[in-house]
Amino acid sequence: MAVVLGLVMCVACHRSDPTRERIIRSVERQLERYPHSTLRDLYKNYFQDRFGPGHIIADEQAADRYLRYELESASSFDGDDYEPTGYEERFQRVNLGVIADGRVPYDKYLSAFVRSVNGIKPITIDEWHKEWAVIDEVIASMQLDLPGYEADRAEIWALIEGGEYVMHHSELFEQHYEPHYRIIESEIFRQEILPLIERKK
Image (tube, rainbow, N blue to C red; front, top):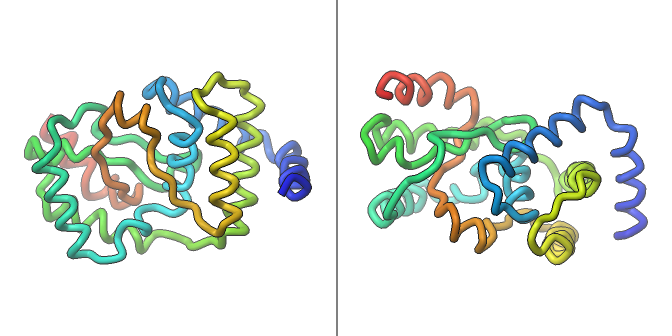
């Protein structure tokens, strides 16, 4: 892995400056909003941007049931109404609070969430391996004092090399922010969900 990673990191060094700057800005955005983030939480933001909600919509009925359960069981829906994922901002994390307070009808939210899978352009694990190596190199160059950084970094690479990509939020993130959101494709969000949120503010 070290040889392959080294080669990809060399590619990252010559990556276009705009890409690098977008990655840096997305890291800064996350840490400004969520200062208790770990590398796991940054990683989750980037894989969500690339893979969207596909990993949690294997069954639309199950997605419906779990969404209803989370709405009923959550004690609060703190945080922003929405925020972009990753550095290409293909998707938006949309707080379930916009359903709970009546601004967005449940069925419209669920439909937008489920249909967001259609906007995903699938990539292979090998392609994700290369993309994460670029992101990883940029994050490393920022010299951030992230809790458990080395352990998280090793776990992420072991996950990817094992042919997987899904990782959950860190316990630290869950404890401080109790996130409740779903991933909606950005164009669907702008056309169908954002107008409802803004109209009823």
